[in-house]
Structures are given as C-alpha cells and as structure tokens.
Length: 209
Image 1 (cartoon, rainbow, N blue to C red):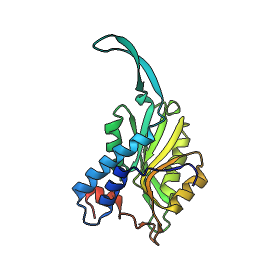
Image 2: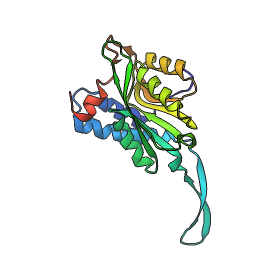
Image 3: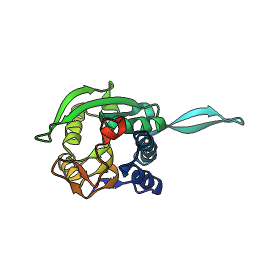
C-alpha cells in the first residue's frame, strides 16, 4: 500500500492495545487516545516546514529553528476526530483548527455533510485531517474532496485504525494524500465497522454507548 505509514512505535502499539479492550472505561479510552495522538503527531509532523529566528541564550545571540506552526491546520471530522485533535494540539499549539461535520447514512454508508468551517487563507496552509477510524473511506474521501476546493498546500490523513477497504477507497480517490495510522485491521463487517477494531470510537470517547 503506497503512501501509507503505519506507526508501529512500541508505545503507540501498547496504548492501542489498551484502547481496544472492551472493558476500557470512557475516561481511560479518552486519555489513551490523547496520549496516542501526541505520539503519532511526532511522525506526522516530521517534515513540517521550519524557519530560523533570532534568539538570545544566556550566553549569546544566535539563529535557531522553530516550526512554522501557524501555517498548519488540523481538521477534525466531527465528532470523533476531536479525540485526536486535542492530543495533537498539545504538541502543536500554534496550529489553526478546522471542522467538518459528516455522518454516515446507515443504509447507504455514504457520507452526508452538515458542517464545514475552515480558517482563512487555506491556500497557504498544510492540512492534517484527523478521524479515529478509516472504515469504508467514504467520510475521508468526502472531507478531502471539500478541502481540495480550497487549494491547501498539502493534505495528510491521520487515523487510529484503518480497514483495507477504507485505505483502498481513499487512495483510489486521492492517491496524493498520505495516510498515517497505528494499525491496518483485517476487514469491515456488514455494518461498515472495522474488525477486530475497537468499536464505535465516538461512543467510546464521549460515553454515548
């Protein structure tokens, strides 16, 4: 699978295993997701643009590099994307934030948009789209479709878990968008849920089972 990055760091895999357990509480699931998002942000931002600024150490003046974080936009696919968003913002607090509201039609499994709000000057910005699950891929494709209308400099997609079907769907529609995930699971079931997966990420984050 070209342009797919599985983040297999031991800490990422350890926390993911704890999140998969059906007896994980809402509190622990939410906390682990935030921690895991911070770890994944390390890999996702590896090639972020930097700039040199003038600073003074206790001993002398120097030029030193900082992340050009104001050019980064983290886009959360509501509502579950907010679970990853918070963890990533703790690592890159200077990032702007956008939101896309999508829900999956239970009969057709297609994505229906109900909200779209982005920062200004998107053509100058790099975008990281976050959503815990890349299942059918329909929501991811719909989100990237909308974002490309604004001509951002680049787009990456970050998820906690992916299904092979979702990866194939997103890559077929947008082969230029790299996918970052902690694991690619076996398959989807008849209802479009990832197997073995971890259940409904939104319900587990917000305690709305």
